[in-house]
Amino acid sequence: LPHMISHGDGGSNTNASGLPFEKCVLRNHIPGKTYNIGGKDYVYIRQGNFTNHMSDLKDAYWEHDKKPDGAYVSSDRKTVILFECKHQIIPGSVDEKLRTGPCLLEEYRHLYPGVNFHLAFIVNDWWFRQKKYEIPIKFNEKYGIKVFFAKHGDVSWKMHINRKTRKWTLFPAYYTLDESEVNHWMTERSLQS
Image (tube, rainbow, N blue to C red; front, side):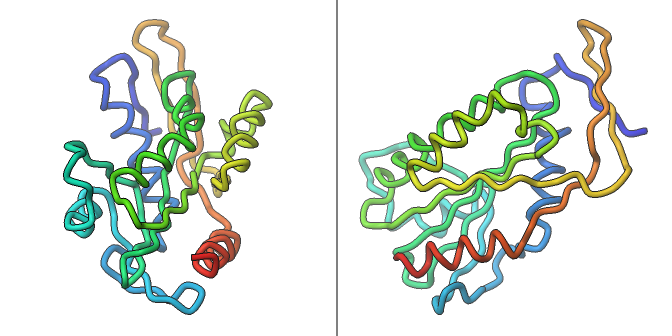
């Protein structure tokens, strides 16, 4: 049974849990490939490649960069559809990031003035279907930010071990995403732009 251990380096949990989740739920989105969405061509880009692709449109006033987990950038670079993937298996800071959607969207708009941004979160249903997330999800939707739930897809499980408490948690190893729902949402956003 594959496992990860918490209370190590800060980014180690992201690498152990978050990156495999991103690769799993974004597996049908191929970096560098052009897709037609709502009659417009978009190229799919991941993380650091986004800042390179958009560098000449960035407001020079801002020194920092944003690296989305995934982004569809229109061929004229006037519309960007962003995806942020959040995988949570134990209480921690990842679930707080769901609450920052409107600020994140506004930050992209300041960094790249004149570009129309749309944002969606992809989260694991296993964790984010808890009642306490209803308020931040509705808050995001109020600002046009969609939250998609990736469902655990098979019977494979991983184990998380907390070094401090010696408690262990089982969590799904594989997720599926309703691609037709995602495609429909992206088409609507593209047609609005």
